[in-house]
Length: 251
Ligand code: SAM
Ligand code: CA
Image 1 (cartoon, protein in one colour):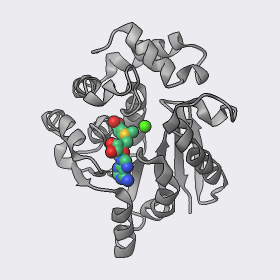
Image 2 (cartoon, helix red, strand yellow):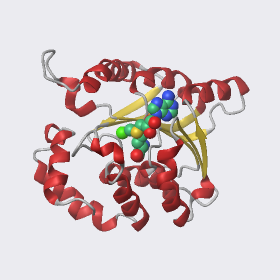
Image 3 (cartoon, protein in one colour):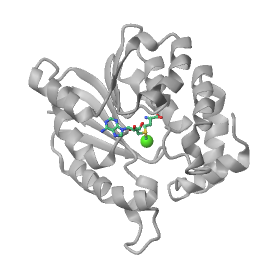
Image 4 (cartoon, protein in one colour):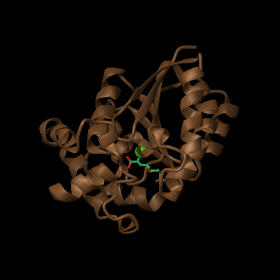
């Protein structure tokens, strides 16, 4: 990997895994024992390219955008377990979770991938192409919400998605959920990412939180409550990465 142990450790503390696991050493153990040795070469390469992204300079030592390697491994496994074929991703960035998805799908699998920023996607695209899975991806540049509205209006996309991964603007998650619950099939899965939001979901009101963490926290809290109360889904909140809530549509 591109980073040394110290760097990895500080990043890890920064994103608050310590509150989720017994120790940083335990997280490191998971990475070194079960994740890195089995990480496909293209995913490793993409992770290294992403680690050099200029945005890192704004948040030194912070892994705020990209999906962590253990979460990538989890997504890849989940997609295979549910035999996903038709999928969607909202929030691509440089494409780490997208590549984890593309590698898990059968050769005729599809991913509708949306992001307001094409440049970051194009940073990872050569690796995705080299891995031989780019043909599964239909990338749309722009905000996801109007695309979802269009699909709802069309009518023919209702109940067609096996899996949807949501990892974009947290203040829109509730808006996404209203639409995605129509688009995912009964028995299909929606994964909402960052539902533990740096561990801030349990921070006291006067806790010194970064501005963006504080701003989005209320939206994450609202989403978590709404998902728990939604009778159309079964849910499971996992302390993987920054927290991911798996929702299985049941009606
Ligand atoms: N899943 C990605 C990965 O594994 O690296 C990380 C996604 S990153 C946390 C969030 C992404 O959401 C950013 O690339 C951002 O441009 C995108 N985004 C923000 N607002 C959006 C919107 N309204 N519609 C689509 N994408 C959006
Ligand atoms: Ca995320």
